[in-house]
Image 1 (cartoon, rainbow, N blue to C red):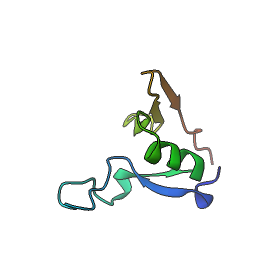
Image 2: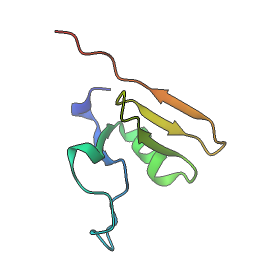
Image 3: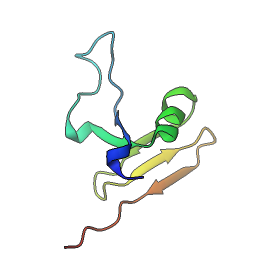
Image 4: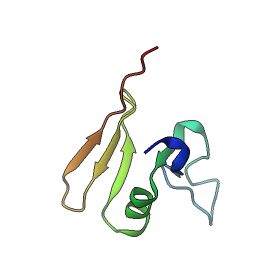
Amino acid sequence: MPASRCDLDHVRAFDHARPERGGPTTPENLQPLCRRHHRLKTHHPGWSVGRDARTGGAVWTAPTGHTYINTPPLYRE
């Protein structure tokens, strides 16, 4: 899904009750997720997603503990 058709989601959750404690709204803490995956992460307990700092890939963890890595394609000019 192209990022232009995705939701921007916080990698480290934003805390609406205490914004100073939650994840910041900065490029380093945002990622594009399609609506389906955004809802999965937000509304289905046990699912989580983080970012591999080295590759930029999304690392999904299922409620079972299994991990799935989605590595972005290499940029070529």
